[in-house]
Length: 104
Image 1 (cartoon, one colour):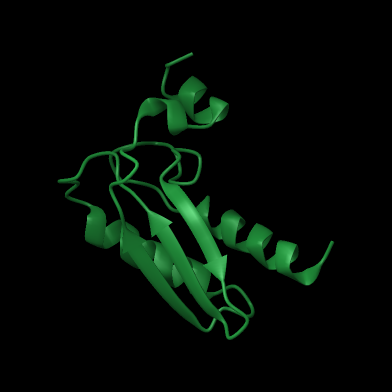
Image 2 (cartoon, helix red, strand yellow; image 1 turned 90 degrees about the vertical axis):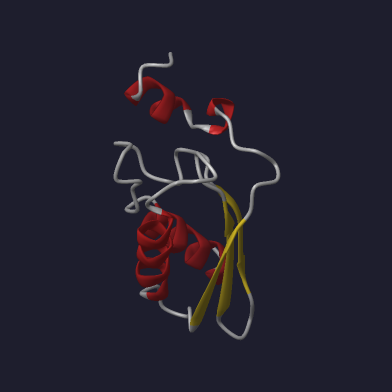
């Protein structure tokens, strides 16, 4: 496996440890992560959304994302951008997340 894919896999693994405190499914399987971009200089840009625009846990979630992905070797700086386009809906969740939440 090439080094880039290995780093991306480690980043995804860390994102799967971040949870919205109100939902027992990680943010990656919820489909909240729209883009992961690791530049050669170590700048990691993540575009993510929230299940609701007025999510009270947004600061907690973003800080958790920053701390956890910053621990991946090669990541020197983390930029987390919250976006609302496209709007999130339940169809973006993984099958496992849908099962966990009783949607399947």
